[in-house]
Image (tube, rainbow, N blue to C red; front, side, top):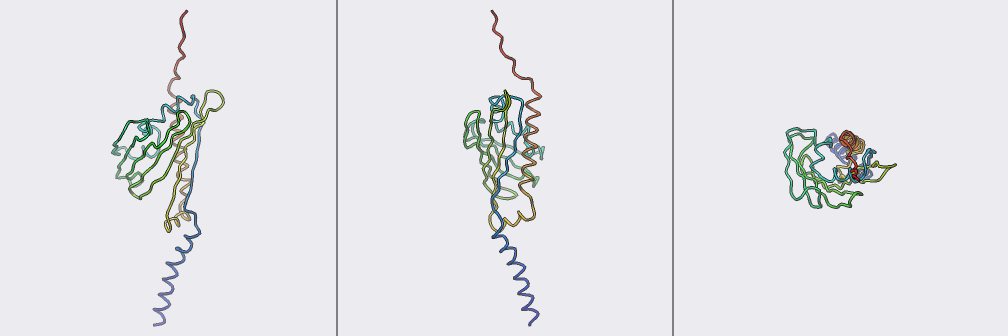
Length: 190
């Protein structure tokens, strides 16, 4: 009988210790990365404002060539939704909506993840003029894990993983925009 009581106490401790520890682990995080693109702000903004263009530079969009896409609304405007569905568990199912836009300055998004986990998280892109006719583009993502799932922060470095993916996406965008010929200035004839 004493063995069973000891075993029960031991099992209770095994369950209780992580749950208690999760009370002291953060539940929110934010990641911001940036890149300088050798193009003017208006040109970068005019490309990025279209969610469909993210397929050309986002790391997550490129993870599954067989991804199923659907859209609602007018791309490049507030309320436009780009939805995705993939059998790849790293991609899963969800949608991204443009929730606010400030021309040539900022675009805010809401990401709604459905699988492999559920969550609604904000993200934004910030466009700033940089040394001449270049653009400092920041991509920021905020995340949250409810108790007791926040215990995963002790084992998985979400911030570094997401920062790496965002930076790779921005690097892809930089390469894409800088490889296209710059618009020619119109020369007026006399």
